[in-house]
Image (tube, rainbow, N blue to C red; front, side, top):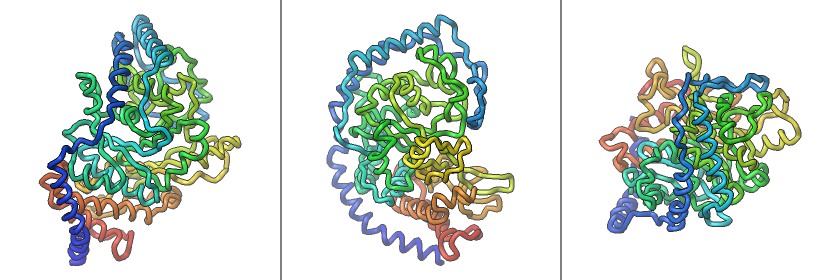
Length: 482
């Protein structure tokens, strides 16, 4: 009964908003739903696309002898990089020539990259089941006090959700941009680009000069606006965060890109690209070369940069581009940490925590590298990336096994309880309760209004039941299911 009453109260609280939203949405549906797409982006794409295709590799795709192992990063590991791809000398020469031609074209006469000077904002890609997850993350971001605008890139009109794009996201200072509207400026160009390649195109076509890219399932714990006005971003213009693994770049890539492979003793962590900070003004060439690596990623550069290790895709393309072009960057040295809950078999991780680049930079510029054993206090946690599974309230209760929020006995459980030190550092129960408050809001506000939840009439009810069980009276206790 208590669960029913609390659900009814939440429904009533949302009712007024819903009536207004439905009226506005119905009225707006008589007008074109198209967000204003800048003709400057289309002009840029018409100028830039020929440079990409003129330098297309004619070489065969690399042959994988086997996939590289995902080895945890250890700064003391001086083993050489794995060499697991096979390419003929002719194919290597062809790739080297195509890569060199592209570099020459963007250095000699780069197309004018469009953005509004002196602006900064958030950029993400979403669509389908990722859109409600993005709403949850964006509401968590707004809890930090940040008012930065966000541009949300959708693949096509098939992913456009009128209620979300015209009501919910604008109320959070975010707008939807349909990527195909820009790519269609060049006939058939979008047919060669898959969704997992879209991240770099969202950055490319963002209107902001300075970008914080966030995956739909990532959010900051602190107001991120300080990152734009502090070192290392002021001096570097590009910040990335680490993954768990040692890099697995093929030696062939260094031959093709014609720069010196790293000394194994100085290799840094691989990259986790759920968060990335970039200045389009200072790193135009880096962004253009990263686009080249992604445009030909599935056929050539993804295997060259990862050799089949965990997360192969766009994640290594940004630092590879900056390194090849000798442009500055800073990769946070504080290792990524996994957060989850204990299970009878050990640990069920669902979330990654990344750390404050400002505090990390203050340590490393003094020569204090915690990853190498220095005893300095850790930087504060800054980003949470709820990467697997997604905490989509329509699906999260049936994920797994292991499930992040339903234990092995079928009872509701907290998702973020281990390891103790990381959970305590990022706010523990308070942060988890805050996140589930936003999940609950999203579940009840969007039920019956978005395509990916069509036919689901239990999303709000189930999420309300979970919230009341875990965060109601006796917060955080291990209550029985229901």
